[in-house]
Image (tube, rainbow, N blue to C red; front, side, top):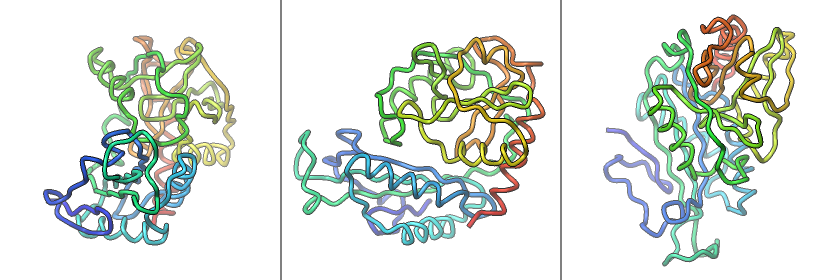
Amino acid sequence: MRTVYVNGEYIAEDQAKVSIFDRGFLMGDGIYEVTSVLDGKLIDFEGHAIRLQRSMSELDMQSPIEMDDLLEVHRELVRLNGVDEGMIYLQITRGAPDDRDFVYPDPETTKPTIVLFTQNKPGLADSPMSKTGMKVISIADQRWARRDIKTVQLLYPSMAKMAAKAAGKDDAWMVEDGAVTEGSSNNAYIVKGNTIITRHLGNEILHGITRAAVLRFAREAQMNVEERSFTIEEAQKADEAFITSASTFVMPVVEIDDAPIGAGTPGPVVARLREIYLEEMRKAAI
């Protein structure tokens, strides 16, 4: 049984409780981060901590914990649960006032709720899908307009994944005003020659921590990077395609809406990017 962290306490998962009045439960008024663990160490913790602080700032939410202390909580959960490869899920909500109300509660009397738990994922870095590639469908992007804030409002991404599952595919890329925004829980990319193309940052997409690292490594490897919109049709004509996220790292996409990408198998650019990312992140893990 896992040990989890709830509001300052390490407790058994079956003893963990959050109020029914918690605004994360009632209003989706919360944010989250997922940090991967490789070799028992945290991958890109600083990037996730910085984005967490930004999300809280955008929602006028106070932090219930200092970042140095948050790092120690992550490390202690890794130790207590014996995680070698896996993930740590962190969620902070605006807390649990005495009753339900649309108006934010007074932060002096209602403290934020903080919850962390681990997920053991042996073989995370050696996923079989990295050898076969993913198949995706496209769907309309019907989420709210502030996707740059990593909120717990994940109903539509869940619907997107279920639509992909119903179609016998692995995931969905979302499209708005004719252009791809991102995947259901990941950033989306195409490759043309030596150029990597991915949507520019803005409120329309999550500012991926893995995205930032991969683009930095790509530029260091003398690859060209274009941050701009692209269409499904352009993606289908690309040489390669891929996604990035904290839990999948760099994952090839070999089919979009039944059209094979390139040869229909993972290509050399994506394979090299995944290799570089895992190598560099393991070196920098804490």
